[in-house]
Image (cartoon, rainbow, N blue to C red; front, side, top):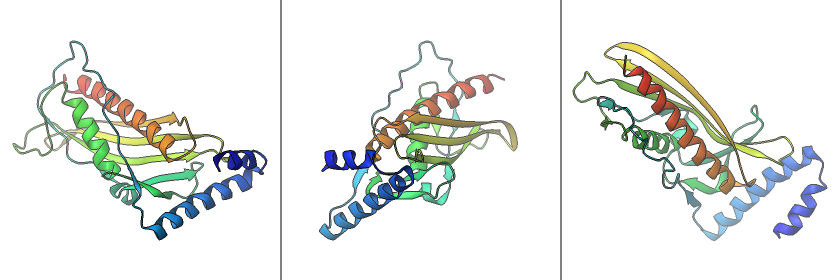
Length: 208
């Protein structure tokens, strides 16, 4: 089946490739729905991060759960064709938790390598990192021959009522395969890179 599809796909006009891709995703979801099979769950897996050698330790900080667009507060696995394409959701796959929660936890794991990280600012005077997840999706090229996992995350450092600094992280990682599993792997790598960038940014900011 996969061989026949790949042979046919190469001979289809680029515009029709996109329509074919969309149709196949929809049909696959409908078929599974009739059989009552639950969507396959995806997660970020074990962290690829390695504890930094002689890392600078930071004071205790608070990292509340990230805010996000409504689609990213659900367990949808999102894909689209081109940056301006309408977001779609795979019907046969879902994340084990909303992307906003998954990304927050990965960032907390990374920052914990350098000091205590609390989810709530219980004492009221801790530096606080507020996160906003703006994109977490697989974006296909117009002809469907390539895709990438894209993560856009805004981090804002606050002390008391004062905004100290903010950082916008925009990472794109090419997918090895043009399907949900390839997109998920690309997003795992993008999440680890984003966590590292935010950690390095905070190392500088918290020394001031």
